[in-house]
Image 1 (cartoon, helix red, strand yellow):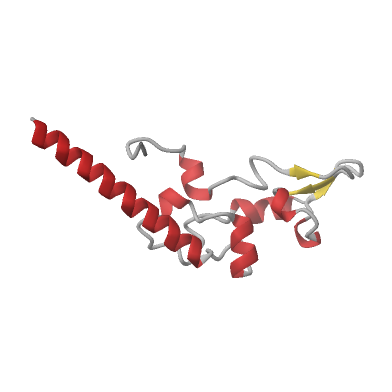
Image 2 (tube, helix red, strand yellow; image 1 turned 180 degrees about the vertical axis):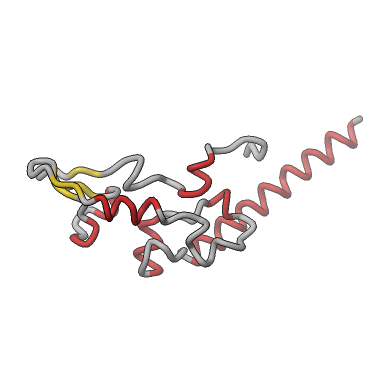
Length: 130
């Protein structure tokens, strides 16, 4: 059963997965990327372990990719459940980590609507049994 009473910590509700800040992907060559889905994208190469380099600007860009900076998310009722979506999907399908992937948004909202309806049905059953 989906637990609508609990959820992720506050930072997860704002930023989602945390790529580029809470974790990174490291290639066998020591290259550092925000997550495995950005591996090979030179514009998102954060540095290299062997060279001792790390680009804090890219880290800051990912830290700034949250529901209060994404235009589609600012007024969305579901923003604290999807957290602005996957940054890699946003980049691949919307062209920018700061723009939400619209299909993912629609899908997530539909999932939440279904979960809310299921929860409401269970609560109604519980009330009817009393």
